Amino acid sequence: MDILTIETPSLGDRSYLVTDGRVAAVVDPQRDIDRVLALVEERGLELTHVLETHKHNDYVSGGPELARVTGAAYVMAADEEMFVTTLGVADGDELTIGGLTVRALHTPGHTPTHMSYVVTDGEQQAVFTGGSLLYGSVGRTDLISRAAKEELTRLQHASAQRLARELPDTTTVLPTHGFGSFCSSAAADEHTSDVDPKYGVETSTIGEQRRANLALTITDEDEFVDTLLSGLDAYPRYYAHMAPRNKLGAGPIDLTPAVEADPAELAQRIHAGEWVVDLRSRTAFAADHVTGTVNVEVGDSFITYLAWLVPWGMPVTLIGDTQEEVDEAQRQLVRVGIDRPAAQATGGIDGYGQGADRGSYPVVGLEDLAERLADAQPPTILDVRRADERSRGGIEGSSHIPIHEIELRMEEVPTDTEVWVYCASGYRASIAASLLARGGRRPVLIDDSDERFEELGFELTSA
Image 1 (cartoon, rainbow, N blue to C red):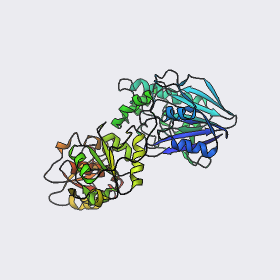
Image 2: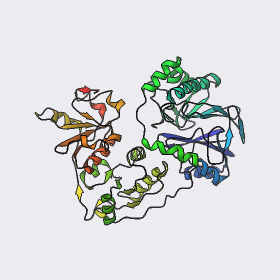
Image 3: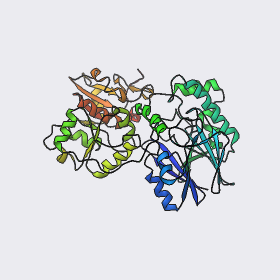
Image 4: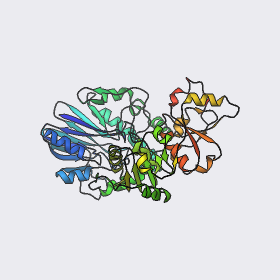
């Protein structure tokens, strides 16, 4: 048995290709299935099954389209209501994939119908746990409904306990979530996984999880429920649109470049209130940008925050220095169901910004803030981290508006003074700064890490 990992760092998720060397199955494929098809072709494999652990809340699945293109069976819990053709499985059902045996285990909690898949070739064994047992923790249980979260948390605990009870300690654990995904609940403090030379990525085993996983070390169900639910904070609001789209089954994607917009069209789109998203680095944007654009630097956090913040259905235009930047952003967009950009512009700001109003704002470090706090009139400071981050300590005297609430609470931000904006690393602060500038405020971007608070002697508050 060979297992290949397909990582999607921008969503904190993994998909897997498992094969006996001749035939293969894919577990939880992302929307851009060309990555799967390339691996299948490279290895000369026949793809016979697409195994879906659950109806996903954080991305649009590529499963139905991958099954259609390859003729593979689309495997999902039989009790999951779907409007695409599936091969429904129930607890204990077995599938044969070449020389591999796949056993479905019902592991509810992350979703009510969640399935894990135990795969073996008679010698090696792995369990694909989706959003059930993660590394150090489990998938969050509040995505289906607030009313059901306690019941699902109890089911999640029982599912994790079942996996640990029924599977040998040597079984490799391969979750979909847990690598930065907001589908993960609060992780345990202990290190519970290592880079496996066989797979080339971080993996773990049932035995390792038994010793350190939150759901296995807390044996009292009530204590587990209290612990898990107390650690849940806000999750991206675009999640509300993912499960319905997955229920219907998404079709093929189009990654060809969008129509090129000239400066006049960009100006029209900005004036109409649309999102024109500048993909350049936070420092380049701060130094010079088209007024009214929003800076979401393309990278691993790009789609999580763009899709979280942009009003759903709002046309999105992508602008940047290179076509490669725009292509990467476009690929990330389709993974969450934003199928096509409204337009694009490349070639740098001196091209698409010709004749446009331009803006800029300062970029500073925490040392600069420490110096200013000693002044008789310290600056206005805004913390845009999540509430759980703020509770661990924010700069004394700073206001707190989580980034996903910035536009809703813009009136709380003063217009007559500079606003120094910080987060944990500078990434979210850069997005917030661009939104403040778009809203007529005067941001100063603190491009620094909150891990330096103690080093620089800041007084902290959780209020």
